[in-house]
Length: 159
Image 1: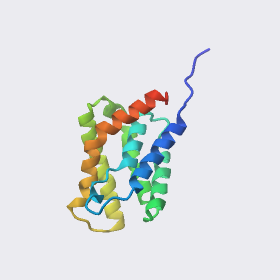
Image 2: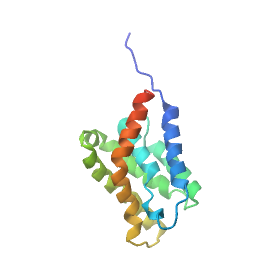
Image 3: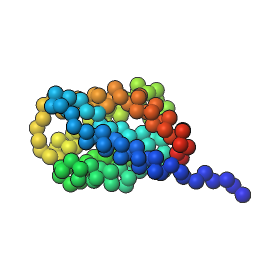
Image 4: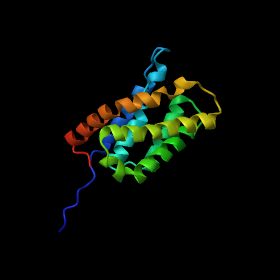
């Protein structure tokens, strides 16, 4: 009889995404609001790379839809953008996992920029150069988030 690892830790994944949503909703002074990292997207990208069978396009779409509702934006824009990015992460997750953290961060920066391009194009709002700062800050924070979530995954035996 073969031993099959049952998926476990689904609540940990959900709780980490909820924590990321709370971090996205925390108020910041106007001078710092453009430096807010994409907490939810970074968390989704980590879980999609680490557990591609657990966190997929549908999961990302639901989280994006929930974020659209939370932010009061046009319904479906973040859902589409998150689903697109997670599709690309899933497609390249084996390659991404082989990269060192700095190279992962640069690769993921392009995907975070893709979300910003999609949201800017679909909402037809023109923004300045400061609108791209969250992607830069997210890139710099990727190694910290990766190490933290990997520690959470190992501590709680999420698989």
